Image 1 (spheres, rainbow, N blue to C red):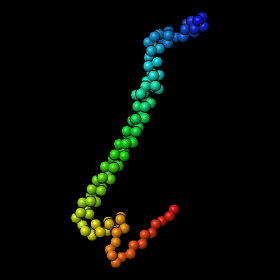
Image 2 (tube, rainbow, N blue to C red):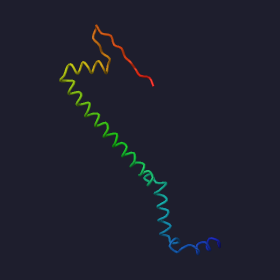
Image 3 (tube, rainbow, N blue to C red):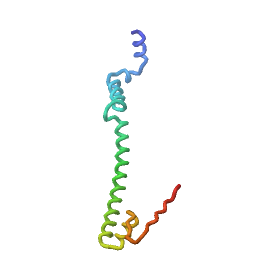
Image 4 (tube, rainbow, N blue to C red):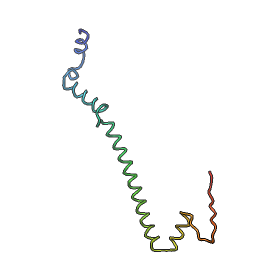
Length: 103
């Protein structure tokens, strides 16, 4: 007990006050232990930014696909070309040769 009193006397009076100790305990709790800690908040903000980038990417893909769909609905030749290239469709009297590049 005497050692604690000596230590308490050596410490700065600001550190010994109950308000400083309470504030320190609060900051430690909010930094590491709370469900909404500072660390988890930063992680969530980074994840949100990543998800917003993904959303922008998918919105761009949707707009491109919509434009392609409009073109395919209006042009039969383009629709036939698309079906041949993407889905390997062919006419009855044709043969298809698929070349793939191996790394």
